[in-house]
Length: 469
Ligand SMILES: NC(=O)c1ccc[n+]([C@@H]2O[C@H](COP(=O)([O-])OP(=O)(O)OC[C@H]3O[C@@H](n4cnc5c(N)ncnc54)[C@H](OP(=O)(O)O)[C@@H]3O)[C@@H](O)[C@H]2O)c1
Image 1: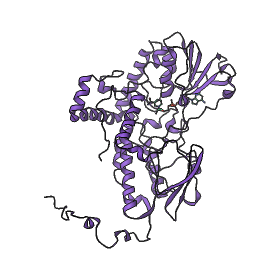
Image 2: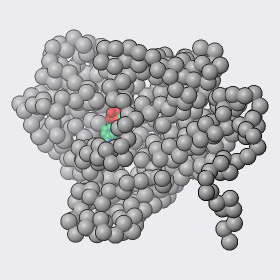
Image 3: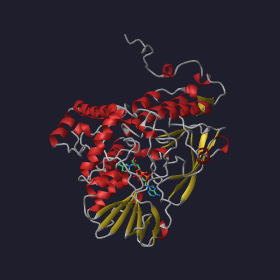
Image 4: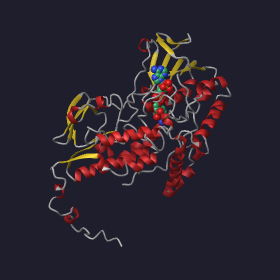
């Protein structure tokens, strides 16, 4: 099957809602009967590689039961923003009001008439602020760094608008003429790939974005230069994730919303005390403070010589092209360390990774391979090269971000060292020269069996299929 597959002519708008995207996934899973092979609410609590059998032994927890299972190849698709954590702020857990993390949201909570604080100004806080501002008596955003609020990603395709609702006529044309839908999708992704210049430090696109975004932020703040000075970064646009955030800046023009840039000293039982001596009396504290992005699994994952990935990646997650790791055979990752999560289409990148893993699966199965594992040399060279080339890109700029595991000066650990298209090029082939391959039989040719090809055993097969012209 070609990937990506299952284009959808019925999206209601350019930026679809989470519920609509989920409904699309659910019906696509049904259509292709994928739920036959998916087990939900099954948690891996332990995984250990057996190098004699070439299998991963798994311990799985489900509905209070713990049982064993195994597989030849283990693929980690846990995502890089799935382990949320409370921030390390003194007194937070002694707060007597309600505290909530953005990743454990209570949809039904009523903010009406409440005094609320939002800590942080990443993408989560930026989306939460305008909603809570509608009903809170008072809302304060406590931030410790400025942030770029940009036009919508890919919004050039819809003329810079906040969103575009597709008309019934457009959707009918997309349904009846798949070519037209394909042209529209290509236009969006071509534009996004073409815009990569923005991520190159000191490029003309970066300079232009810096100027125009500063101006746009001031405009959206109603010309409030004092707030604009606090919110507008001096570092590169895109260094931290560029966030559109309709309504975030506009919220500060409301009388019930304020901004605090004074560092938090501590949380008291009734509010937050900041270093400037202000005590913010609060009913609710919303921690939009991000995730554990260390890439370390939350369970023991033991590779060769009982090495635990949590220890191996204790200081830095040094992976192979984001998809594999030395010492951990037959283990592949979606969006592992240094994956293309900083620009371009994430869905497209996931489909390229799927194709890459599928190629290994086919090779492992058809050549009777016990295990494959990237070499330490290939991985080390990849990371040395990657760190060097990363200096060219804005992600290594002067901001603190989760791309650098919450540091200002450290390595960039989350983002691929280049364009999304360069990632596609690199993982387009397997590069077995970067791997140690161990065959089950001890002879790399034994898989050829009795010296005849598989097609020769297929009843009625065309045995001259290679004559195309
Ligand atoms: N597609 C979407 O609609 C969507 C929506 C939300 C999130 N996301 C994804 O999720 C990613 C993470 O977003 P996020 O906003 O959840 O996390 P984030 O980008 O890591 O932002 C965390 C924020 O909390 C602040 N913070 C953390 N610890 C703190 C502490 N101890 N004291 C004070 N402030 C603290 C950080 O301050 P500093 O800036 O000083 O570090 C930062 O502003 C996004 O970049 C995006 O990829 C996507």
